[in-house]
Image (cartoon, rainbow over all chains, first blue to last red; front, top):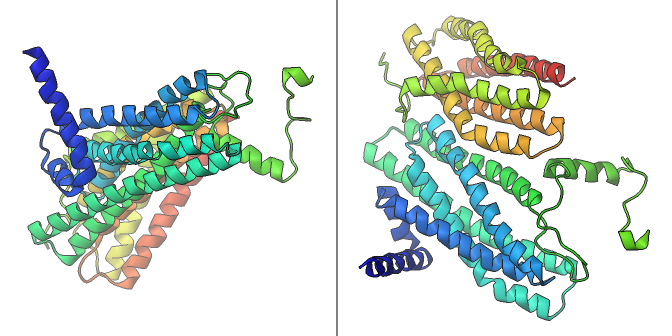
Length: 260
Length: 170
């Protein structure tokens, strides 16, 4: 009996993922109406975790060994942690400007969009493995990874923008709102998306920075699970700008033990 | 004139005001944790509510002088909604700000992050206030008055905030 229930649940989850890939309009309507949002969020969390673990493992395979497991654990944590910290900003900023936002629906929307992006990235893993097979240089691999993540990120963002623009249009039409009210609502959702993008970029950048490395040179003798806390991404960017201007805070870069 | 707001509030006004009071305390706590002093806990809300209380009559007087001011009750309601919007926006920004500050080793990052959160929420609140105060026959003069008032309010609050942050971090 329990096994049958689990099978039905798994089938339903696979159906939800299929819906996300094939018919996102229906998926967005489901989120808008608040149909079983809890189950949807759970499915999306599992989807993101598995898809990003696959991508992480593929990136880790560039160095091989322990790094495959390390990156497979860390990459899902980065995306899920960033989503958990950033999604409330969409609801809060929208509500502040008069958008009729619901935290559960907004969370489901953000998770669905990120799951879509994660699935696109998972679809790119053969390209990562091809890069490894062709022995692309470390920097070429980095650039290829940035391009793949950018494409997936833009696809996720497009899904969120499309969902919120539909919502704004629907509310304006249904309420018979005046032009000024409709314009305010429209500006409100755009500001909410812009705010989400800013918060997501900052939090995601910092969390990814804190949990690095993911892609490691093959000749690296040992890889740590995470590097020691050396400051934030903002600190590193500031330091790089200072170094570029010839302002250094240390005499020279540290050498590996073997070269000393 | 109708007292109906320009945009229906999607939240209970009491909740917004509670968050408006709690949000600056929470952001002050982030700064306090880095600085090791409790001053920002009281300093942040004092600056925000103090500056709004000190400058809001000036906005009403200036708009009233142009002959376009809504009734006092509508202005008070607009300010309450804007403060609620400020609190709601902060509620969404507190967690990211706390994470970014706690995961950094630099005090400058903490100040930058907390200032950005407060500034961002303030700008959203000012936009909400502008929407609530706008009337169909609003003139360019009243818009200019609002922009000047908003710039002055942000400038005063920003200066006080930066002074507080510098003092507790030194």
